[in-house]
Length: 256
Image 1 (cartoon, rainbow, N blue to C red):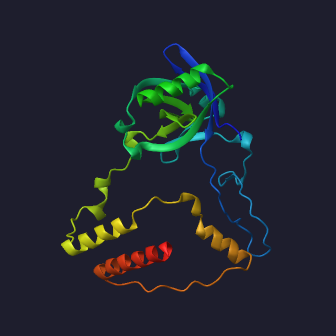
Image 2: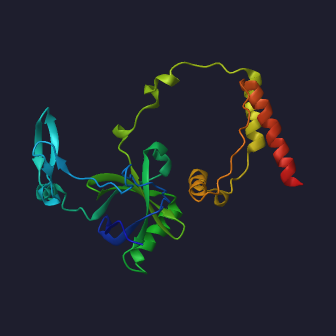
Image 3: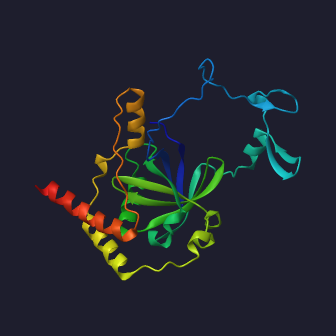
């Protein structure tokens, strides 16, 4: 497994050499775009419509649009000079409670591991964060951007979560579809509540897989079976009553 970032956690005069690893490896299923005539995989080119030719990587520069047809241009060298000097450090600003942070701020998660085994300062930080139920709040330069982060104790190590800046979040109040209030009848409320109570249990996450990808693979291998369409009730009350009935029936079958 390859580390996505290497550097140091710094707080006070303490500096801990660490590495970051992505916590997940999404199992992606993708198609290639082919030529409709000969089925050859298509290639993408960096093409300049003004010069009417392909542009090599070494000739690519980066531009920020100021106004129509006017750009502020940067070379790779210029951009690298703009990076802060401490680009290899996670600077800890303070320690706080995780409940201080709105869950919507959470972006990506990474495992933090010590750069070398038996790094005492690393395990000291982990144990203290666990004992005090605190998280470390700080910032990091990664993927050409300065991120706000929190660091917390997690099982045998540390977990880093990058945060969105508050101004990057869309406000739910801005959504037009939620501005009008909808009245719910007492019967609808009680049935929905009963359905939730009937369906309440701890999910067995290991049982689940991407069924869409599974069906695609079966179709490709010629093993797909047609699935019978289930009739759907048109009214909300009918759907709630039928749902409660079906869940009870399923639970009874599982217990037998």
